[in-house]
Length: 185
Image (cartoon, rainbow, N blue to C red):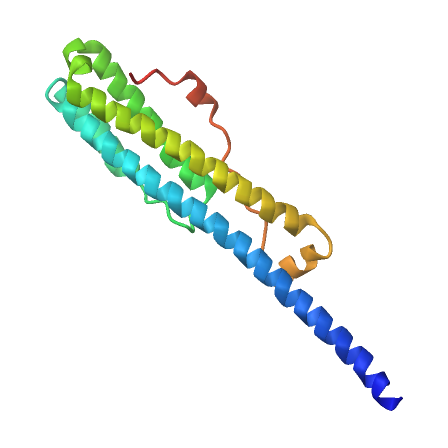
């Protein structure tokens, strides 16, 4: 019977240890899902910048001054979005793209022959497809953030999260200005 005195505490310690490891691994997996989603958004934003640059090059022959202004703005404010980027940094890059697209659209309105150009139409279509992909990426990111934040807020996981340095993540908020964004077709 003496061994039972030792088996019960050891079994409890093993069970608690296994639970701690399991909880930490679960939180780490959720955190990695968020990092992956942000990284994918970064790739999509980079592709959108490439399409935006191609679109900007098409406007160069029509409005040289506007081309230079938009190009300089993009070069000075563009940053790469990585897995470690915050929701605010991703939003700032999306706002930069939205602003540049609005300005390119304004140029195209002034030059109907540019708007009728087949390369312009194809490139604008690519930009719109990247926009759809970024929206999907935002949904995945926000879903992953919800799962992590929900788990972190629940007791006793909240204690483990604090011990291992997991904290709530910010959502990618909806951009009200996109609802009023000009039609790019």
